[in-house]
Image (cartoon, rainbow over the protein chains, first blue to last red):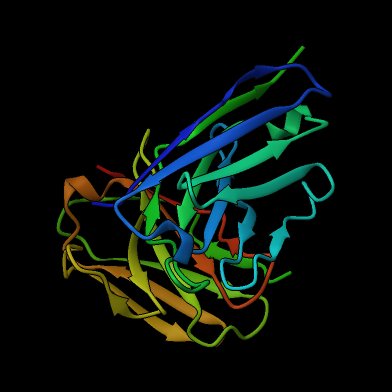
Length: 119
Length: 107
């Protein structure tokens, strides 16, 4: 059974940093494209970043480019999101999700971890 | 950036009714359009892939159609458990984008 479990969320002050983790199990993690998607309270889904497992390239939404870094440790079956220079508008539930061995539809999602950026 | 516009934003419907949600892309995306259902407090769940392909375990009352720029999610004979927000998503280009969501309320 595929499982994705996020952790690392919490309350942080504006300008602060936080690292999210997503522990994966039930599939060959190293072969799967992984993403972060966020959802502000009461709002819609917004894609944040992805890690291309084929060439280890990464992509980011313009709103987080230069502040957030996605990475993965295949030995630990874990995906990370390092978030720096956090702003109030980064407040959201952050989901990790996979599009399998391609870059297409999100077939599995974690339960999400809440990040709150507030003084 | 490819913008996805869903309509309506909100719909209040009765059980057994047929519901149609549309998703329009700002440029052609072929069949790279997928649909999700999200219930309050839960993660999104994949309903339809590549515009019209069904997903194992998803009730057959959920149907998708369309290609290019215009797509439709149809829910036949709505059930109370279908109360949720529905999102379309395009995987044609980066940045990946979602529609703004359509909230369905069951009367």
